[in-house]
Amino acid sequence: MSPDGDDDNDGRSPGQAWRSLARADAKAFEPGDRLLLRGGGRFPGSLKLGEDEAGRADKPVVVGSYGGGRATIVADNTPGISVHNTAGVEIRELAIVGGNGTYAAHGGVHVYSDRPDGKRLRHVSVADVEVSGFQIGIQIGSASRTTGFHEVRIRDSVLRNNKDIGLLTYGPPTHEEAPTGYAHEDVVVSGVQAHHNAGDPDADDRHTGNGIVFGSVRGGRIQDSSAHDNGSRASTEAGEGPIGIWSYDSTGLLMEHNRSYRNHTGSRVDGAGFGLDSNVSDSTVQYNLAFGNDGPGFHAYTSKKNDAHNGNVFRFNISSNDARKWPEKGAIHVHGNVMHGLQMYNNTVVVTDTIRPGPAVRLTAEGQNMTFHNNTLVTDGPLLIVADKAFRTGQALWQGNVYYSTVGRGIVQWGGKTYSGLEEWRSATGQEMTDGRKTGFEADPCFRGGKAPVVNKASDAALLVPVCDALADKGLDLRSLFGIDAGRQDYFGEALGRTVPVGAALTETDGASRADGRAP
Image 1 (cartoon, rainbow, N blue to C red):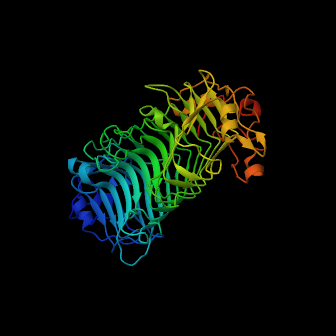
Image 2 (image 1 turned 60 degrees about the vertical axis):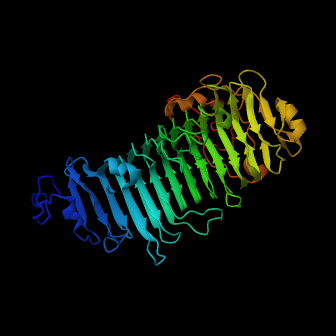
Image 3 (image 1 turned 90 degrees about the vertical axis):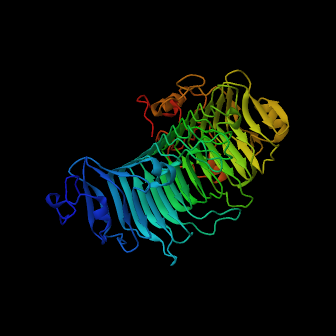
């Protein structure tokens, strides 16, 4: 296709290019076909691939650009590209731009299945695209938990200035029951930037202004991606708010080496950097950086009263200067109904005061076997932990953590009581004890950037490397003590070996060298 082509041409070469998307849409695309739009050209309209087209993972239909640069599809009142009840499709090297109608109600790339045969469709790839001006940038959806998509790859793309969400996968809602299946399997998002997806100020009934959201996925990864400056126009009255990168109704997920920062919320909830939400199980959030978010850097939450939020892990993450709008939520917030087996270990949290002091960790969820090990918690106010109830050690157990308030001895609020310092809290509650010995300690972690460094860009994470021996080799050996495999590296990719750090990074005296300030 070319802007100076002719729809009466055969469309088989640049010299015989078609002109309009309407002409291309009239063609039934067979496995192995390619539709190529001239780079730099603008093509009004939309394209739809239906169930009688494409369909083979080994011979995908390709929609992309030729001749250098991206071609631009300009849609209005329709999706930019729709894929319905088929797969074996690759979309690449395009800009997809929406008008007023698309911003209200359409997806830039909309992939959806409502097949009645229960068959999951294989191979959807979206790469090197830029999508803007839609309600949702890219959405992968299914009408049931058996007829979604398998082997989905979304990479190296920019999703910006959309209304509700940059990227979304979804299936049928679960309501109060635990998931009995998942619409999509093997979904990988890598190198995606979701930013300035502002939200809908009139949407009081739902969350809007999100970056990347995984719903109804079994076995997925979000890696090397970022979500920032989303949610700035989200409703002030909504009962739920936006989050940078999060998931719900999913299992077996991995979120790693991502950045989520300066995300916002219009209401009194959410605005977090990363989240594992209702009905998420057996998932890991690791080596991620959150900073400058309105809400917590990291949150675990469930609104359900089932047992489906279980076996989740947050490890080797960094939160700096989060909870800007709602400091009382904490930089790490664990809240909602019942959680089972949540593990939070080797995270570094620094909370600095803005409008009012806030804790490093806020704990409000009903839970069983929630554990907090080897975390470094720093505030420039008195509060370190706020727990809304006096959790028993079988519900929430703290061991081997470092606590530091720059204004003096830190405070723990545990249920209706306030404890001044670690020793008082330990004696009253049995926390920070391991096999009859005292664990955890109060100390300045001796960060490179000072007592409470503020991260404003990814490379600033190096400011949170401990540079003296206060934390050197002080971490609990999670494998030998608790059977927890902590992995092979710290946040910066330094090999752990036999040395177990406290917080997300080895100290310089443990052999770590990060003079270049690199970050994942």
